[in-house]
Length: 332
Ligand code: ASP
Image (cartoon, rainbow, N blue to C red; front, top):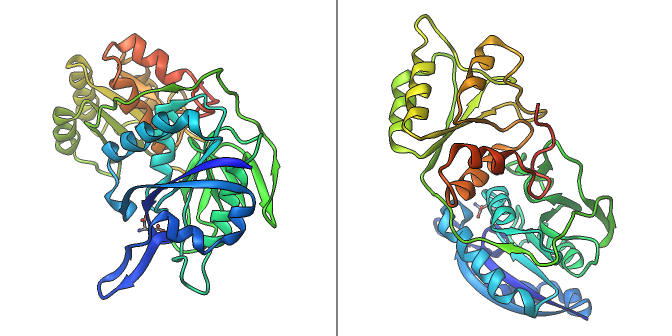
């Protein structure tokens, strides 16, 4: 039998009702008792890293999960991480940069309804997660949810209530599960030994453009952040209004050594700054990077990982456009 380490972090799956609403209470060992079938496919050890609503996750928590994976990597065949759904896609993206090229499955899962509810999705998701963690064809970081196996850099929570909570953005599912049987469509590439990292630059922000976005807001963020993701409209661009002041703000930030990552607020198909004048001008700025078909979650985690290693504009661009865990396909 495969040896699997289950890392508990909290979320709805582990929640119980309190007078103030749902709150994570159950340990990973208590969760396992609800799904006795798991003991027939895996020998499981449990480690409770934290027990929080994933709303409270920070980059420091991502690093703590990555450190636990590094510490226990050699002792187990695979890993299941139980996690709240709200920020699971961010954690999956971050872990994809902090633990690169792993052959062993690192499977995140959770649920929309607590495990002690009659109408729960927790048991199905947990069993499926263990099936994937025991498999020979799932590699590296992925989310297993509602019968889908989604690559960690491509996941997004797209339903706030339905069981089909996660989608794979601009990339196919790695596989599907029916009746806990796995069919793998894509086997991610692996390294002889994974690369582990534990430094992220947390000083990264995100702004979503709205019609009439105020230059002062952009200035405020760029003065304080090392990098800023700008979720533009459509394929991407900055409003020039009548005086080009947003472009001027971006230029000054680049001169001050900041990075701007242009991404799109449109969920599917990604950015392409070369198409319109409002975008094309940004391509001339050395520290402006373009997310193309990456998700904002992945672009955010990737720039945090990159700035944890270098501030050099050329090296940062090289790392940003080098695919990691299938995060980027289209690059203009
Ligand atoms: N608020 C919960 C969390 O993200 C939601 C969930 O787990 O489904 O921890």
